[in-house]
Amino acid sequence: MDIRACKYVTYLFFSSLIWVFAMAVDTASASNPIYQIQWQTDGIISELDINGITIDKTPSKFAGTGSMPINIWLKPGSNAVTIRLRPLPESDNRGSYKVFLAKTQAGQYVDEGEKVFEFAWESGKTKDKLPLKKEIDFTPQFVQPLDLWTKTERITLDAGTEKAIRSFLKTLSDAYLKADADKIAKLREFKVNEISRAFSGKAMSMTELKNETKDYLNMLKSDNAKFAPIDTAGAKLQLVAENRLVLVTAKNGAPLLIAKSASDEYVVQIYLARINGKWVVAR
Image (cartoon, rainbow, N blue to C red; front, side):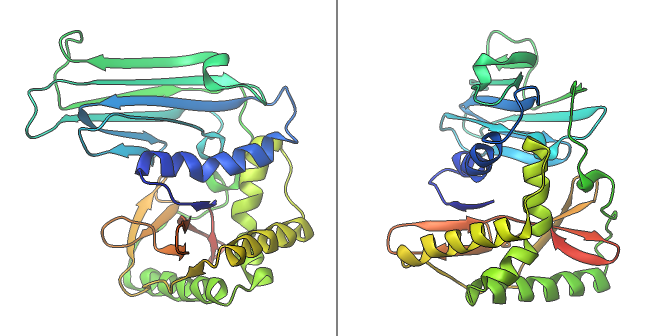
């Protein structure tokens, strides 16, 4: 979702869904499970993926912690969590890592939910040495079926596809530069409805979506935050989620669509998908 950027990448990913989570849970049924994952890393390089989507990447020696609801990345049946741990070049293999997945209900914190699985690694206490790759499969008791896994096409990044993506990025960039609420709402329709359905089981009407988009743009305006044009030619394109999504970033992996004010940054993460030959903002 569209977010205010934070200092650390871990928290940035966390923040990117906290607003969505709060919005959706307001209308979620108490019987609709919400799957939340929590991680802690200290002194090692770590990466946490769910179904091919990077949820957290901590590339430094600093301790990090975070949690997020992951319903938007889940599918019916088996789901895969992949953990990659590496020692820092200057370290002596010391450090620790923990990850905990829980099934919660609306309004619950992750530690209040029912444990799905837990994994921990700690130097001196765990027999496995770094580097380490751990894959954990789990099957949720309930997942709202999402179009990401059924209606999107599997993508190959050939020359024609890359040209079409960069053209779509130009359209997206222009809409944000002009603060065109109606056009932005239409471009975000698939994304917002997938997120809303993942937690509440219901899509958002176009009227609601347009009003929400206008509120968001008014918030940016009140903070005097302005978007910079997307560098469409220099955008890095990466296939994720079983080649169903294209993650679009700057060459260094940083987000491409950012509004800046004197004191804040507002980030729009970009994941694109193709449905019946048409490109959409999918996440």
